[in-house]
Image (cartoon, rainbow, N blue to C red):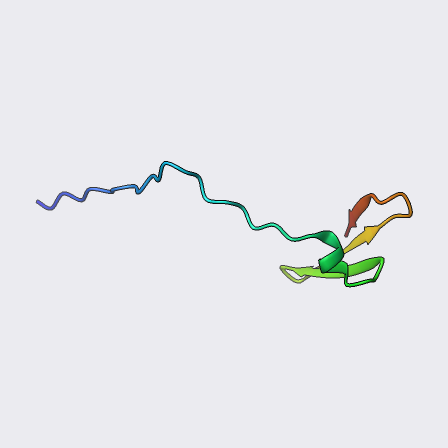
Length: 55
């Protein structure tokens, strides 16, 4: 009988999450479209500097 052992590699430090500045994403525009699983979402920067994501 074969026995399988799963070994998890747990580093002491968690991996950093990717980070991107919203102004770099928008590239001077107020809105951009994001395609995800066949759907289109809109990320919009308001006049007050808030972000709104809508489907």
